[in-house]
Image 1 (cartoon, helix red, strand yellow):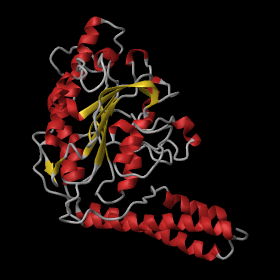
Image 2: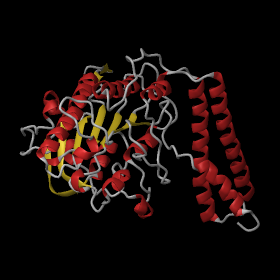
Image 3: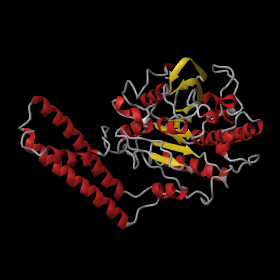
Length: 418
């Protein structure tokens, strides 16, 4: 670049390009369109699901539901359970949790073209700014656990309080907050203007190869500029008005049943209003007892059961409750009609956890359940050989409408599902 201050240019570019690249079309689905968009939900049971009670004993569509899965009986034809899947080579117990939706440890991200980007963020890039929120990230009393990651290796913060989730989705910002957001967008627009001006000043000094690289780079800058403009439009557009759910005060450990239902209801409202089409939600795994009948030992301690019968009994109560809530949510999706279909058929739900055996902190043989989404569900699929779990993500992303051939360490798709 001869006399051009390359470090100055890259510094400026770095500020701008920290924003994710959005290659998808800009704008919402046309009003009155009869096309129902696809949605993706990722649910993380942080402490996993105890294997002996979760995995069915037999396979195929006519399998017998396991004790943990029995609450899903009415939806048996609408979900698939996978066994013999894991993120091959990923270890670290709780520390591997950040790799659940990518299959890639942060320490090994440089070995992959897109780093350790997670499936939810990959899908959010595809949606772009068609919705107010590209993706929602909800952590139910989830501490500092990091579930979602960008291609640049940055973790995406989670909203943890029920009231904050509701306000974010359905309560309009004050004039002062809108003004602050507009100022931030204007600052980013100014940075883009500087980048474009600097790029033009050096363009004629580049050889053919560098010129092509510059064209690619400027294309991404222009897409970011479009994204900023659309974000300005979203700031001015009123949020959808919905009836606020019942009293949202309480603790997940003191009001477990109520709080779980409320989080699910907010996810349902987000989908129904098309506020977002991608939602990631992490369930708690703290030290306090969950307030369900029969539970008097802390959830995390129960996960370290050491095959103790009483601890396993209580742990299984909690895990069945997860499935009871999932079943209730699936019923609500199924009862929500949309463009000649229903919301369950347009919403793929993935539920798993980063450990196949939390008692020994093992990341092998992970629990995996895929529901809804219009897939050809197969009952219990026991993979004939150890299979990379990212193959499920690749299948989901392709079904979501993405034209990709791989995702992270994937080795193929689950063809029977489509």
